[in-house]
Length: 464
Image (tube, rainbow, N blue to C red):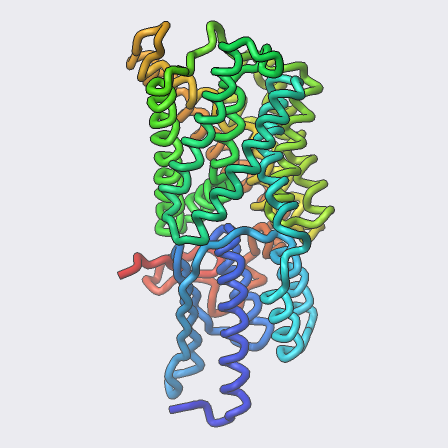
């Protein structure tokens, strides 16, 4: 049976479709599954749909509305295809969701959403390319203030970004894109090493390892890692597992690309070498400037507006400041990275209570300077050996495990900071969590198995 009132039926379908498309855009941009579900439920509730069940996995969203025993449920399913993040579009959606809760009519909300959906990016693609390249240059600034290394890393970043876009347009899988990007990074470093060996004036004093480090951080999928950590602590284990696996696959592509590039450098007769001593950070002012620039350039690459860029820069500076302070107090790299990620995530999550800036975007930008790119590169070189230094698999494995420990510490700090931030804000905002009292009554209390449920009362089912 269909609803007796055709207008009511149209209202149901229109509201569910609006919620589904909103969830699609937010999930594809990297938002956590919990926040996607909460947003969709609140949109549905604002238009009188109080019996909606939402189910989210990494690549699909479904929503079902059951009006009563005499009316069959209305169910929507939508496949989500991850794309390039556009944080300006996400921020516009946040504003729209607030207007919906304040009584914006459904017809007007659909018109506004359609404008957001088809809106072009706020600035040209070449600006985003410069932002992506600036990420690598900012990371290099953590270690050196040499303008030559920074310029070479920036130019290399522009080449990598254009190559990745070209491969994406031709449907090349992410693993092979990461592999190709890592090979290009090591080839640029090989060219610098050859110039240094030949005594080229421009290359004098340049460290190829820093160029590789900047390229590695450019290729790291920070937004996916943040989303995976948030989904794990929110008990969306299917989505969290999928995101973790994506991070693992893409990181494997980076590692294999670096190894292939190093071997190719040997074949070309210009081998890369491990520095005689550990590469130290530059002056503190340069470190803070580098972390600030890295976070700001990442949000520029993600098509953010000026407010989001400024806040991300502040979060990057704050996170690195906590990292440097913790190191100064004698903590290890893993603990310091966790402290920096915690500080950035906590501040970003609290900020979402009073702004329309997506917290996951700020956190993704802030943790990039903490990524252990140099440790990864050094561990690989130690494991496979160099002409002046035999292969030391045990030492290389230890360095790689240290890099892995730092990466896990960043994820743990991000998760704890997000959790504490939600607690501080009381979960009153859909951007950082939601209090049970703000959800439709039918979504509270107990889940379908009679167990006490978390806010939203939903269970994530494994896809068949």
